[in-house]
Image 1 (cartoon, helix red, strand yellow):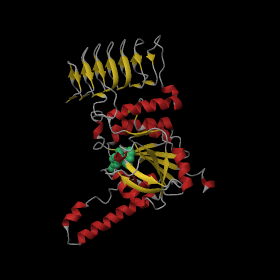
Image 2 (image 1 turned 30 degrees about the vertical axis):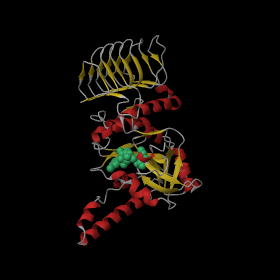
Image 3 (image 1 turned 60 degrees about the vertical axis):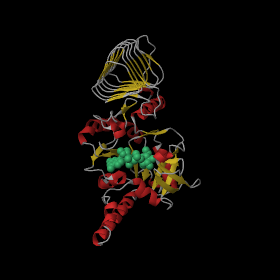
Image 4 (image 1 turned 90 degrees about the horizontal axis):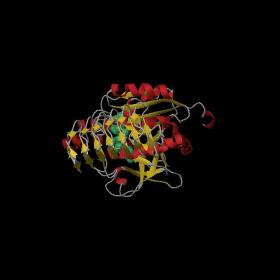
Length: 417
Ligand code: GDD
């Protein structure tokens, strides 16, 4: 095994879901697929993709989803050129589930004869320790290895929870989103598998087909057949593969002690933008802005400014600020912990704190858009949808504003529909 290490190819698959998923991300997912929403100035999916680049012998990266191909075409071609690794978007005709989607494209995924397949959820934020996982996986010698992390006992039931052997790291028990407490160790949505994963998925789907045939043949109990009527090609990785295969010496865990977040809501995306900006300090410091207010704006902490943005030298920006393309930041503007999306106009002395300002929105002179910064609460981050106008001197606090609204009076703790 060891001497073939140089030749072994590896591929990576990133599950991006589709428009019917990610509904908690509204209003920011109305016009932009959630995987392309910018965190630290780069599309969400860009972060796992650039982490894949560090995998030795990486042959290809596949994105699998049921969004329209044209939504991803531009990004996929530019990132392929930038990384010099082919990145392909594969569109499912309908959702097949997290394992069914992988199986659906097995022939394309196996095209280069890879020895290992990384599988990543696109909506997780971490430092993706992929080469270390590969090493650990080879040591364990199983079919799959899952990245796991400890979370608070109160939040564990929102995830796949598990028990693993403290010595061998074997996955002993796995329950997806349990109703009662199982463990504070959870599934991060980042895996590595050998190609045997395809046989495991096929077994589930064959088993379902057999049961469906049996029900069709038997005349008894129609209600049972409707109750279990999951399409045979719809296979969930968690319930259908990880749970039944745990405790069978096939699946292992690799624990990260570093940061990890699941990106389901706009509030958390602001937190993750900050985590990725902090990581740029170590991995890509050239992406971070600097300035002391003489020729360019005063920059505090980790800040990303798109090269096409125009920021007045009297503005003060940071920490945790990300400014996208064609934004105009006027004199005296103050920005703290926020994401400013493309084509936004911020007029003189506007202030934005703990907020996300949607594409093409504008903030008038002396206006304030702010929130208390509780990432987990529904109104803890103020969100302005696309093309929202905040008129001068208007104050918006702890609110969500849907696209195309004009605010000429101040609002607090409101959802403006
Ligand atoms: N292509 C495709 N097709 N992608 C899908 C499909 C599908 O039919 N269904 C889900 N996905 C993608 C989602 O976009 C997401 O990236 C990933 O697969 C997992 O989504 P869900 O199945 O909705 O699960 P979850 O996000 O609620 O929870 C999963 O991730 C957690 C970590 O973030 C589970 O694996 C949990 O156990 C885990 O803790």
